Each structure stands twice: as C-alpha cells, then as structure tokens.
Length: 268
Ligand SMILES: Nc1ncnc2c1ncn2[C@@H]1O[C@H](COP(=O)(O)OP(=O)(O)O)[C@@H](O)[C@H]1O
Ligand SMILES: [Mg+2]
Image: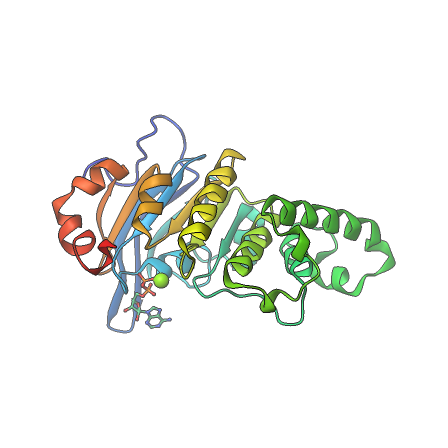
C-alpha cells in the first residue's frame, strides 16, 4: 500500500490519532479487519467504502462506543482502546452520528449546552438543575453555545425545539454540540447524508472552517465530490479491510478503488 502502514504523509509530525492492527468481530462477522492508519493534526481525512464496509463500526471503536477485538488506538499519545466514551471525550474527541441523536424536548441552544458540559467543572446534572454555585459557569456555557450557533448560522433557531427543525438544521445543531466540547478531533459520520446540494456545499464550507480553527477532522461520507474537495487524505475500506490510503487525486486514479466503489452505483 502506498504511504506505508499507520504513517501520515505530512512528514515528521506525531499523528493525532493512530490505529494499529485494529479488528472488530461481531460473532462470525469480521466487521473491521486489521486496519491501521493515522491522522495528522490539522488535516481532514475521509473514510469511504461501500455500505457495510465497516466505516461506522470503525468510528464506534475510535470513540469508545464499542470495544476493539484486537489492536491499539492511540489518541494524543495515549492508548484509548478499552476506555469509556466520556473519558475519550474528555481527552478531546467529539463526534456526530450517522443517525442524528438530538434530545427530545430540548431547544437547539440546550442541546449545544449539553455538549459543552463534558468540559465544565460542575458537570451535566448540576448544570441542568442550575445549582446556585454553577450559575456563573452556566452563563459562560450559554454564551459559548450561542456563539457556536451563530458560527453555524442558526442563532435565530436557538430557542426552537431541536427535533422539530429541518434536517439540515438538525445536522448543524449536532455539529455545534460536538464543537461545544472544544475537541481536538471531530468525527463526522455522513455529515451530508440526506442534504441537498446547497446544504452539502454549506457543510463542506463548515468542515474546512472547523479545520482552519485548528480542529482535526475525520469523516465518513458518501458524497464523493464533497470528499474529493475537502479531504487531505482518503482511507478506503472494503469488507472491513483497508484497500487504499492516499490523496484524493491518487484515489481517483486507483483502479481497485474504482472497481469496488467509485465505478458502482455511487458514481452520482
Ligand atoms: N452492533 C453490531 N452487531 C452486529 N453486527 C454489526 C453491528 N454493527 C455493525 N454490524 C455489521 O458490521 C458490518 C459493518 O457495518 P457498518 O460499520 O455499519 O458499515 P458502514 O458504516 O461502512 O456501512 C455490517 O455487516 C453490519 O451489519
Ligand atoms: Mg455507516
């Protein structure tokens, strides 16, 4: 494979995230098969592959939503496989989900504030119950959450119930919630799924802006023009295994990739 296992192309720099020989088995199904790669700080890396290739499972392993069957995952120099999701989040990792997960009965602003609480001293429950000792911190969290909604251009929707918003707006709330935790690494699982061409262009702009803020982005995405436009590197999965890892230009020329993926039904 070009580029070598687990090494980035950026030269010398320590990777922010590195996977070595990661496996995940569900009974007899080998959903992730000996995957190694790394993500350079400040980069945008995309994971592509046909449905069922193991992309979401890979994200679940990285974020600690599922335990690995074998292998190591190193984030900011620390091995994180086996750690709980909240411990990994506190190290500086945030994610959005393929199926949007916003809380019923909460406004957009409240959803984003919940994302912020992973970093606050008093924690989620003290925050929700507004204990007097936490009021000052609460105000700071609210201010920051409003700034993020503004950044994502949905500040006018702050007080609307999040689950009643349009799909593209819910995705923006989810991204604001992830950013509220001030992550070093943001995992986005199909951020453009279900969005129209204009919303997709907006998501592309947001992702590159997030990267320009110094946040490293790892995304799974089916929209090939989005992936090719914004990614520094692309990892291709097929049946759980790494098929290729390269720049967008080289991935587009890789005949193996074209055969299993780009040439098939996803060409549009
Ligand atoms: N929790 C689970 N239990 C059993 N099988 C699973 C589970 N999650 C995913 N799988 C299986 O693992 C494979 C990879 O799924 P997934 O990671 O969702 O693929 P992708 O995101 O690339 O479409 C699929 O065959 C899927 O059915
Ligand atoms: Mg998936």
